[in-house]
Image 1: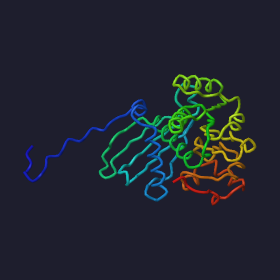
Image 2 (image 1 turned 30 degrees about the horizontal axis):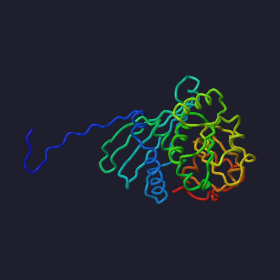
Image 3 (image 1 turned 120 degrees about the vertical axis):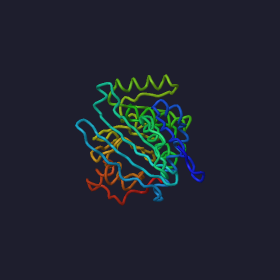
Image 4 (image 1 turned 180 degrees about the horizontal axis):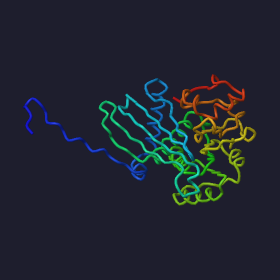
Length: 287
């Protein structure tokens, strides 16, 4: 094909990259993920991010979640599709599966598509690390994690990378899953203690991370000492409540998105429903 001299011949369309979870885990630096998440939170709270509230399609045995996001300052558009099927654990299949596609915001050209279980784990754990940076006790040492699933592994790895010297305790209602978690994490070089109960873990901890899909509180108000930090990241529907509503109502409550918690955060909606607090009691967004 011939082109007049004043026109440039079109360049071949660049092939979209495809990344596996293993690629993501190998290529991505957890410390840089924390920096990126912190920056994204700031941009969001400044109104510089276009991010509709996560949409959810209830399926027979789980949930399908869709999360689009445009960040003009970073020149990217992304769409993440996540499925959460709690019963998969009994089938030997991951509870959470996810895919993300990232496009250039200025052209719409796809940059890459990736398996996003690892990416979801990294991003969620980075959110915890950011919250610890700004909200946790200054000289904390003890981190308790409730839940021993896939997400919990990333929580431990990212928090450990960002806060060297932290001690960890983990609890799960499924004793076999807890033992498998301790063994796997131990092989990676982490020293983690199993807790006999959620109460033991809560009373021991300076920082608590809840990583469950529980519809009944896993952290009771009566167990919690003054001044600790709780990062509740497991719930994603109005029905899921990880934290005692009385505890939530008496806490300094910082959220990632006021708009989102109105729609889907059971840990905020439940104490409001019970008349223990008002939406206006939310102290701030993390950004």
